[in-house]
Image 1 (cartoon, helix red, strand yellow):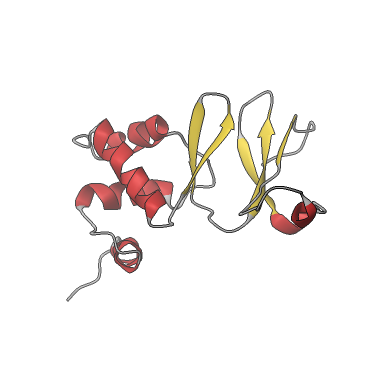
Image 2 (cartoon, one colour):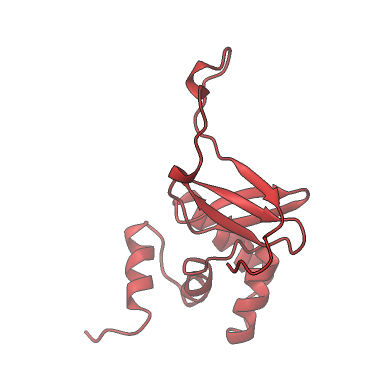
Amino acid sequence: MSSTPQQPLIDRLERAGIRPSAQRVAIAAYVLDTKDHPTADQVWSRVKAEFPMVSRATVYNTLQTFREHGLVQQLVLAEGSVVFDPNVEPHHHFVDDETGIIEDIPWQALRVGKVDELEGVDVREYMVVVRGRRKPGRRR
């Protein structure tokens, strides 16, 4: 059995319990390896450029399958915009007001205190979203 450049992605999908169809592998090749936080339409546009026969519905359904199997997070970080994040480890986000670019902030970079002391709620998880502008000269 020969190995293909896609084999690591195929193996990853199979380990997650997902059948690796050609469309799913094409979507995974982008969305699981990006530092961006793309919308489903951005994923569709990007994947369609190299896999023209992929439908919008296939992309949406595949992203939901990836979310259900723990490969991506589905986040609402801007009003009316759902994005997908392949970083499923605990972390925070910075949203640039000017460009809309979303960047990961390492978990340990911010300290949030007393979450466990909130009354009347059982906190399952939390994330801080920091909004502002990138300082001149600072790159992603």
